[in-house]
Every structure is written in structure tokens, then in C-alpha cells.
Length: 86
Image (cartoon, rainbow, N blue to C red; front, side):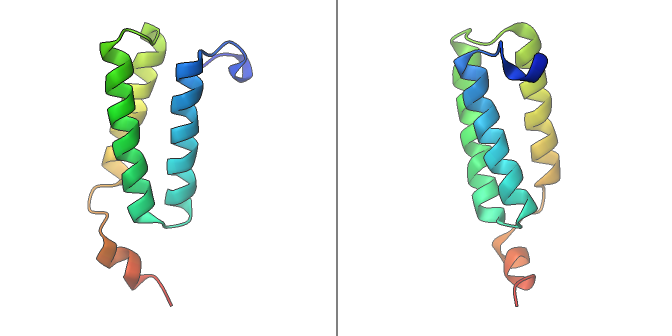
């Protein structure tokens, strides 16, 4: 979005932190944690949108990111996670 995030609002930085956690959990195959992060991201994004605390461009980008995460996590189950262990 903006140059290295220098001009991001505290709300955008908060959402970026949640996104970073989701990505770490997805990369490490921690599916339960990734799904919990997705729920947190979805809920917090909705709150910020309802309160009008995100700029339009940022809101569009976060909605796109939310859709992308939801698509990637389709079919994530604890059973799949256990199958990959050991």
C-alpha cells in the first residue's frame, strides 16, 4: 500500500499484524491457529468497516486479502493437519 507502511493508520497496522500471524501459521501448517486468525481478521475488519475507520483503498485491499485467505483455507481441517505430522 504505502511506502513501507510509514503512513498507515494504527488500524491498518493492527490488521497487518493479524495478517502476518495468519501467514506464519499457514506457512508452518498450524491450520487451527490460521483459522482462528482468519476469524479474528474477519471480525476486526468488519468492526473497522462499520465504524468507518479505514480508508477506502485500504478497505478494498483488506477485503481482497480476506477473500484470498478464505479461498486458501477452504477444506482446512484438524484431520488434515494431523495427517502431516510424524
